[in-house]
Amino acid sequence: MIESDLKTRNSVFVYSSEFEKYLYPPEHPFNTIRAKRVRDIVNPMGLLAGSGGREVAPEPAERIVLKKFHTPRYLHALKSSAAGRWSPEALQMGIGSPDCPIFKGLYEYAVLATGGTLKAAKMILSGETGLAFNPSGGYHHAGPELAAGFCYINDVALACIVLAEQGNRVLYLDVDVHHGDGVAYAFYDRSDVMTISLHQNPKTLFPGTGFEDEIGTGEGEGYCVIVPLPVGTYDQAYLKAFEAIAVPLMKAYNPDVIVFELGADALAGDPLANLSLTNNTYAEIINHLMDFAKPILATGGGGYNVENTVRAWALAWSIFCGADPGQDIHHAVGGVLLESTEWQGGLRDRELAVSDSQRETVMPALEATIEKIKANIFPIHGL
Ligand SMILES: [Zn+2]
Image 1 (cartoon, helix red, strand yellow):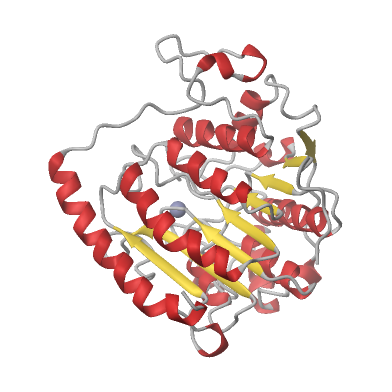
Image 2 (tube, rainbow, N blue to C red):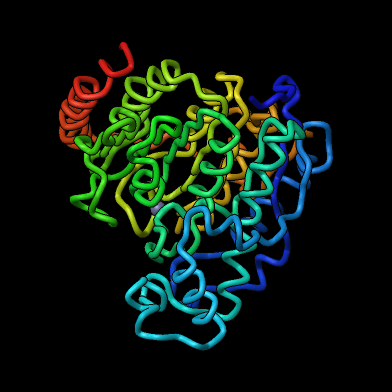
């Protein structure tokens, strides 16, 4: 089991300026600059060089580790395509599709981003840190032989594999607005990695999978937890679902380590999705996770409104460092004032008004989902 001092987590921010050298095509929604933008906010706050948090650079993932999840055939096709030797066989694996285009340095980028998440896993396993955050990670849609949903190499599935290999019970929590399908299905028949994904109802969003009756098979029955959320889900409704489902299951499962995919595309205003969260919900979830007093490996993920995503991840990092600026600017770390002159709430979003019709459509649907999940899964865990 992992030995680390969780009172002072010595939080680690995984970052390299190398990431910005690689760009998805200009018309593509995925933006590799987000990690740098987060760093630009948290560095002047003293959150990368103090006792609470520090920065480490990733190293490219080794091929031998990539093969723990991806097939050699797929890795070969990905590397060849990135080097200009694309084939129709590669397209069958999603490489070169509109969602997963081939761009300059694609292979190096994917391997470095994955290396960042694996470095985080390594530092957690060695006890060097109790919390590591790789905002350039979180590629939860990639399959063993599939590029999908802007994802080429599934760094989060690999991290779960590496952590579980050392005998740890892993809890994978995915709050990206899209179903964390690549990870959920990787561990669908296993009980040593519990996956929990909260996401927009897949009837209305990519990837079209991730319904509450998908609960795992064999040994894994009851260890795949899926919470589909209605369009328009707002803070209070989301937290109700999180507290009713995720919190008791996490307590019952009692993991050794938590892998946390922190996609920020569930925030209101995301151009690719239709939920209505503020980053206060993310803060609340992170506080729940920190209360578990278990090592946390956090990654980025989706988030296509760049400003909102960057602010949410900067807020997340400040909480990871034990320096939540809170809702009152006077509590801001080092008296930092952000550029906005009209909003004095620091990194936190303003509360969003919820309309009556939103309340009336979201809550009953969500409550029915919560009851179904409880009936299907809770008895398996003695709840
Ligand atoms: Zn997403």
